[in-house]
Amino acid sequence: MQVFVRDNNVDQALKVLKKKMQREGILREIRLRGAYEKPSERRVREKAEAIRRVRKLARKKLQREGLLPMPKVKPKLPPRPDIFRAGRPLADPSPSSSPSVASTAK
View 1 (cartoon, rainbow, N blue to C red):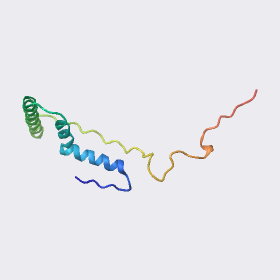
View 2: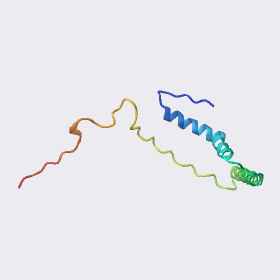
View 3: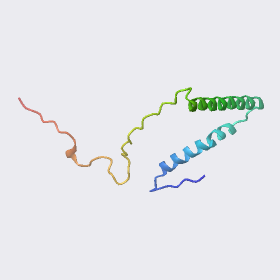
View 4: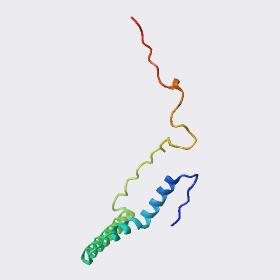
């Protein structure tokens, strides 16, 4: 598996790598192999996975045929401002940026 780092943005490359690993099922397999799994537990897990798979396929088929409503599509959010972008200061160094409070003497 290969991920390219663009503009020295390691955080973004790591995010892409994690997403690829999640999609491939590598993280799940690492967790499964982290500890011994008894053969009986393995059979139970595999059977539950097969049932889940069959149910998902049946649900998708019913949705395509129009017998079940399609899942709601989440609206896309506008992109968040990147406050840590390189080349842009984090804070304005000039003291005039802070609001000044004028006091009145009585």
